[in-house]
Amino acid sequence: MDSIEQSMMAYLCDWHNQMQSHFWLIDGKMDLAITKSKPFQNVFLEQFSILWDHFASTEFNKVCTQNSKNRSKQLYNLGQGSTIMTSQMHSRGNPKTDELMNAIDYFEDHHHKSISWRNKYMQHEHAEMATTRAEVLTQAEAHAQTEPREAISSADSMLGLKLIDESQIMSQALGTRSRH
Image (tube, rainbow, N blue to C red; front, side, top):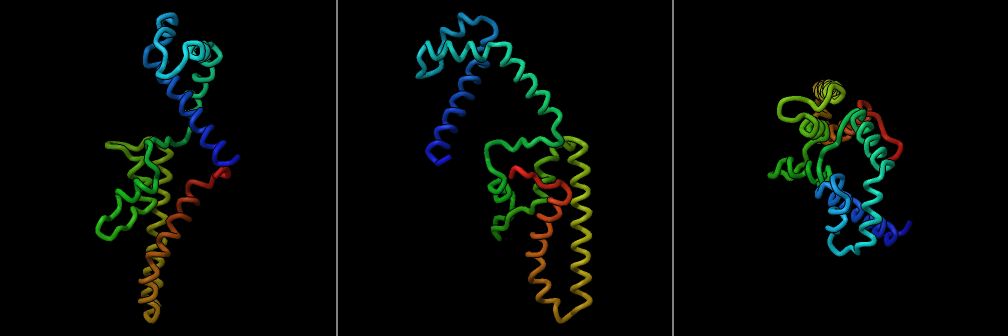
């Protein structure tokens, strides 16, 4: 699929979602006659009626209900909003050194909301990642102390090792997804 097709599909999907949001906003389930008389901006009444019939159908409601049930069964919810992960990590990082927030701390910050974790799975996986990270850092410090000649180069490369190890630690704890 080339970029033009991809952008057209994204536009169509976005337009469909806006129409569906408009349907729920004006409470389309209550009275379809009133709902159909309030079309979405820049949409012909005939097209609007076709979409409304689709959104009001029992088949569509069945799919929506099933999707809601499936979302509740997911091990962890994303909930990051419209900004991408790297921009959030950058904004939460150190502004003086322009260093990104590390991935494991970002996982905690993102999935541990004000008073509790989003679910037990997240709490368990973060505990596993934090324990593994502490073990790796302890091993790196012990290695630096046992070989003093390499201590300077080890200290310089520790930041790089830490970043590589954190991505490996997260992959080990959370697993990898074949679709990505």
